[in-house]
Length: 400
Image (cartoon, rainbow, N blue to C red; front, side):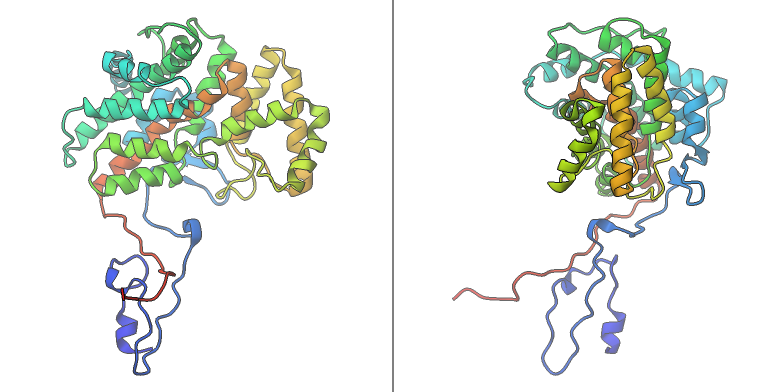
């Protein structure tokens, strides 16, 4: 290799003039084949202090805390403060966060008008995406140098999303909006606005647990999307709109909806093995199983499964629990692939009373905390995210 070849920037540096470079005449060597990582598998693009999966315990850590400990002992508001600010809140900090969140819960008239303008045939994720865009259009101009403004906007967005999601489910059922209550916590008020009454303790606790477990997961597809958009110095709401679009896909957030569709298709525990054998023979992707990060099982599953078990008992739905166990056992026996968080959360949301199409918007209401934490981190030490590509199209050619 020549000296000029050795000096050529490697993958990760921005030199578009070398894209698709062809071998030169005069005996010069062709450039080495690039190391293409489809899906960015194994590529480390940046550092983060927000979360990580511990390689020894396989525990998901939020700012160092195992998520299962947070789900056992903390409110969603406490976890939000942790992800945004790096530490769990003291009494005064929690009170301030709760007060601001409760002040901003109501469904804004211009957002309701935008939601009402959308057909009920639209997926609820389309509704949430549109609502966030409308919210952003009514925000003050975004000063990308002012982190306090970003923190305020993040908290307002966190507070307002439940009203959108709750109202969208209600309007599809022909029901009116339910106004928020300022004497309830985030999870309890969310359920109140959705169903119009106070939730049972078992339902409330399972919902709180699910929100905490879904709040953050490092550089997943939607979070990375948010960081890419942020790296251009776009505003917070643009980043979140992009993240919502990424989360909608069945290979990411939409998997919890697909799990419930699978349960409905299988129908009964006695059919689980035969259904799975037929699905595998047809090379169907079985949603709710496997994870790129967890090779020995998703550490969030035991916590969510315990919450699901309590819901199954509380709602007298042993049939659903039996189906869950039967399909999991069959999948483990045949493929050795373990469930991910979407597998227990789908049936749990079903037992809480949510429509299946609302499952992924619930994910949004939780993950918006992680997204906005990453937006802040990206802004604090920004570099435009612009990877290279390996051109495989035709060589240079000319019109004749």
